[in-house]
Length: 190
Image 1 (cartoon, one colour):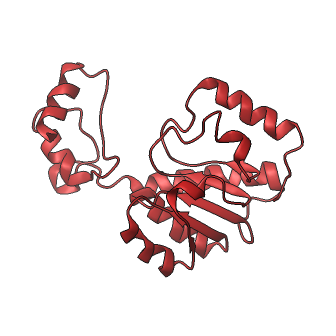
Image 2 (cartoon, rainbow, N blue to C red):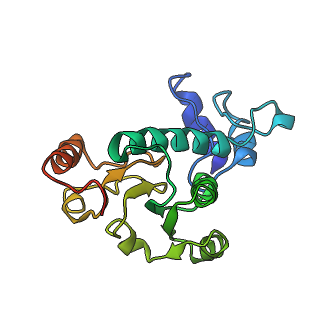
């Protein structure tokens, strides 16, 4: 399958490059790279830059800090109630960093085995279908995209959303819904 992915990426002639995401890692990019030069984040011993999840999490943490400064008046997450959806490679880095920074975490993942990480960082575990509407200050989508839809936005009980998940919105109209919600009296803190 990974070789087929490499063929598909190569067929695009450099208009698209791929890297680890959703259950794949640097070692998988070695296999994809057998068929295309457009496979990134291979292990260093295979000429790549290695695992990108740590640097990705650092970028997300910087974005969260900027959002918190704007929304809550301080970039510090200490004392904020943060719901983190998805405890994959990037989500794991985020859970550890947010916990260390003093955030109160609620977390979930479709893999119940990730509950051990929740316990290790002192987070409250919720079922995946309950996480988006859990009360808190900040929602951090770090799983598959399409979480924020016209059905979900009115049910959100958070004051801000920031995370690394691709395509968090089901469409551009959802961005307008979130903006309207923030401008129409959504509490700064829940």
